[in-house]
Length: 55
Image (cartoon, rainbow, N blue to C red):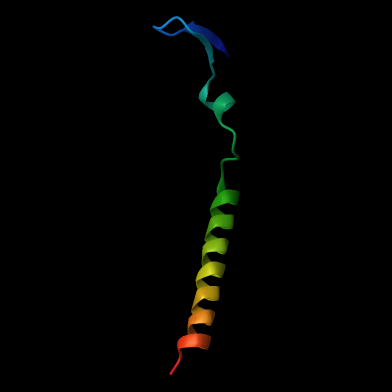
């Protein structure tokens, strides 16, 4: 559902619907990757902290 429109300054461009313009996958997949990556990074930082800064 593309729409050709002209901006007030005279330039033409195409407007896309929300679904057409979306470039990423929606859903739980990205949320799981973010949560697992954040958990792994925090665990790695905790390990490094305890190796180098433990009494």
